[in-house]
Length: 156
Image (cartoon, rainbow, N blue to C red; front, side, top):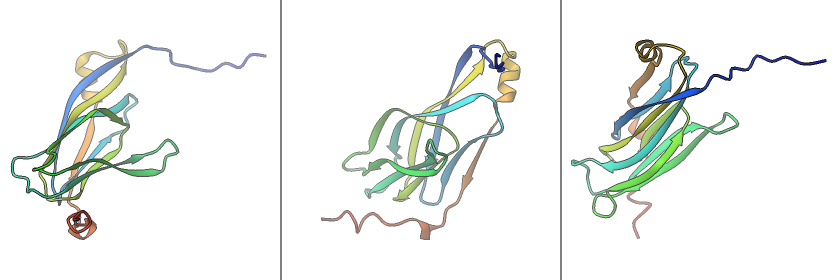
């Protein structure tokens, strides 16, 4: 007896969109995709201190889900204007939802990369594709009490 399964074998067509955000001490960045059947990836390329950033330690953190569906936080970059103002992440890919935040430092910190979307080949016209890829991006102010100063920890 054969088991039959409905498997969609339609080829996927990659779509690439520019991504960029700015982080400050009181401004996290939330990257979410609303009920979209397409596959999404956030490919982060560069983390840089902004022109107005103080010469203090800035730790950039990403929060996402691991393969078991549990939240995980990682440090993406540790920057200081006089030492290392920019870090290349070389296409570090994260599956949404993702929260990017400054764990310490006042910012501004700029993050750039690509939003990758895999859509079914020929499923819809390009106009409809643009309407279906709906991103819900919100800027949430975080409590300064939630952030720790890195200065005291990193002085030798």
